[in-house]
Length: 357
Image (tube, rainbow, N blue to C red; front, side, top):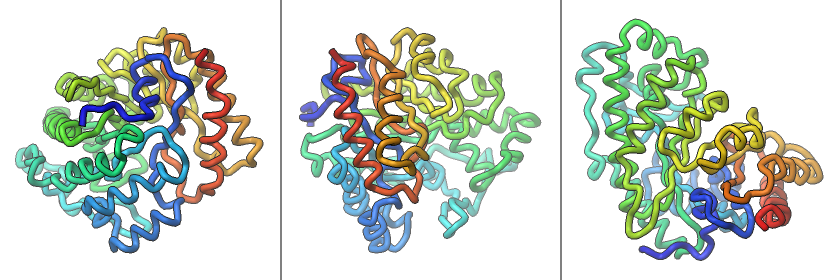
């Protein structure tokens, strides 16, 4: 397992080593915009069955990599597998998104929350990782991931998605002790879960702090960043003779870039509202940066897509001692024309080598 992949540009960029070009992968690259994904999903019967079948999860993980010449694969799973393993009973209703039958809201709910037995409850994830690594056959690196403790807590307390986060923020402002207990169990669970993914073969980690950007700065530090820092401190950063780089992505967190860059991560993901040039100036290449094309650009013409891809590469500038991983500023939209992705990947690979001299 110890070999670096034949195309290890993604890992090199995260570790700020010299690259020949800027690597590219896309958040949610295995998804509903691909006909072959929808076919496999209907074969599985449901989203959860798809995520829980190592063979099918492997199949959909590889689909975008085979189709688009991407520089990394990302494990096909869902951030909510962790709270589901805690017994919150996850389901996906068509058109409604995720729902937990047993949300965590009362003192008793919180008291009965436990770190799940990852080996037993989330074995389907680590089995998928091993299967994907075998199937990739050292072509490109495999990314493992988890939701951040705060983002997971949002779903656990709200019982699903939310527009205003009223339930969790009420808990945060009236019973911070309860929320801290949830977050501390989440952080422990995520640390064990990510380490299990690393032992099964993932070669980089991304922490998705999707809802961290809804907090005030002091709340972000106390309820989100502190717990991500705890996780990063507990991760296997070297495994099997290789460094395992970590990416933290707080959606809407560009204004806290310096805080995030100091939490021990190797790279910071940025959404499209940030400027890579400014971000780079602020962090002085202490971390690599990932991002940050607006996913909606992929609904534009071929010329526009190529132009915007070049703009993002130029915004980062000559790479020098820095590291840039090209990505979208959030997940790809389900209605995206797949041809747009081909154009994007082609332009990044075509235009970026000049920035790596």
